[in-house]
Image 1 (cartoon, rainbow over the protein chains, first blue to last red):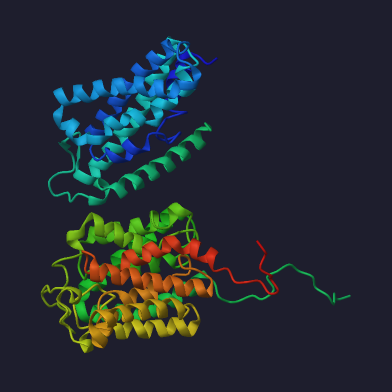
Image 2 (cartoon, one colour):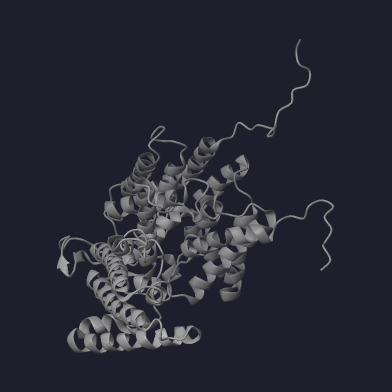
Length: 200
Length: 309
């Protein structure tokens, strides 16, 4: 059994959902045009992941194995609905920008993956640590992607102009192909870095 | 005692040809095209070409960290081909970024020369086109002024938009357009050199130009067919871009299919699409299909019998 610190850090480095496991690619590519959108998406997912991991871990002995997937989806959908309503009430701009990707958190494979692979086999404490690590890893990845795409695609970071007014934005990075190219280059760099560090 | 029988492993036939000699041949073939570009558009064309070539070669030298600056010459060819697809005088940083992207993302990310899926020069152009479209289309085309080396620039719409250039002008090249695409004459002279040296096969340009002509024929008669072949980048694309050895099929039938596919996509974009020109994206799309085409057109082995199902 690994320690809690390892359980937490694996989500950020060794099993980073975006750069190592390639899970949750749909929001990763879809919403990271601006750093704030990436961050918002990451935090929403983190919240849903944390809540669903707790509930599923608590109920892990009560849910019959044969119907566990529908039960998980039901639990996850409950928290996604909460996130959807909260965002709509307090940050309508972000809610409008993320659009369909908020309801789609229900079928995000990170959340279902953690429920299936971790929460149903581990106690509540470990499940919380796992959810925090994975959620942070996802949030950091999306924010990094968003920062790169916003910096070159709009000349700013979190809406603060960085590159000055004479900068001519690189339209490619704001467009969907730019998301694939940026993600591909980051994946390559991550693999290179992990190889150098001896983590496989 | 001298050995009578020398046993060695293949290859037994050696050719003096190597990558560098082929790339130098391509540069020679592009020389008339480059000369014509400078003749028509002045020294600003030369500056664009030099920036693209130097940026491409510098990127290659930095990534490979070995050999001379010229290396095997492929970076110089990529840089020059990229410049040929650009308007006469885009901002210098657009040219430089295009060249760096062409070499770094178009070629070395895939593992260098021979492993790239897409034609590097066209990758550079496509990325510039979607990123800074205002510098690559619209009012950037200059009216050519023969011998007007320092003349002021007058912008003029592309013949693919106006459809009013004469066939003679299109053949000589005295129309507006990208550096390397206006003069059919210079392109054909360059291509004859490549044919003579055996670096390109008739099937790709033949299929490409043939199908473009046939589409034009149905769209507006014989002269429209010729117009579509001569105007825009079809000749540059068919003779110099689609024939890139790395990114086009190796089988004979595959080459023909590749050329036909490029032509069909080009004409679909031109006639029914929102952009006036589609050579770049046509060739890039077919580059992506190259491995599939190669697999499906494997020649039958001698004596091979069709397996019963």
